[in-house]
Image (cartoon, rainbow, N blue to C red; front, side):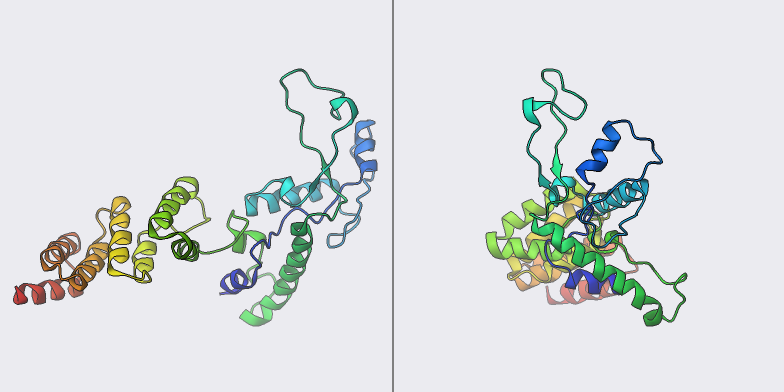
Length: 274
């Protein structure tokens, strides 16, 4: 419930990103000069995380943000000018070797970095309120994190909402192509729900019976033994006055799930009208 509320309140680019923290150039100079691992590191422009946060903890926090949003440093941090002579911090690179990207960590140039600070504050405040809301101790209550809403994507939107917007702006074929591409990219991850019921439910939101049937047939490409999809397709086919098609779909739905009493009842009713 909390995650759902958050996902609705989060701005489109509300990335809980590793954009809050900036390692000062002086700190990097210390490391290049061979400073020991125990030497204090100076962080510049920290506004949410503690100013004295240990470097290993800082890096771990940034990596957690990056993984939660599926982004890299450049999502929030502005680029830094290349060193003179094109030489990196290690003293130069051979031909054909790409230099590591350089970032101006203290800069607040990118809006996403400013949003990230607001998001961190929001999450901190929510975590303080959750125990009282659910009637549990702080240790027992669920701790909200970036991943709670973002699930590995920078914009934490539900798959149905993503497809609906594309269908509205570009049409159903474009939305179906987007579904295939997202499935290819994110299947097996937690970013989007590619389970059997997603497109069955989404098909009900489609504007026309033709679009509804198209989404259900797409679902059958991935779930050819989905009794629920065949049953839903039969209802659409009846809207299209395709009784033969509906009869075949309902027959298949009952074959796949003999315990589906509703599909069996609809099949019997359809046979009586033939």
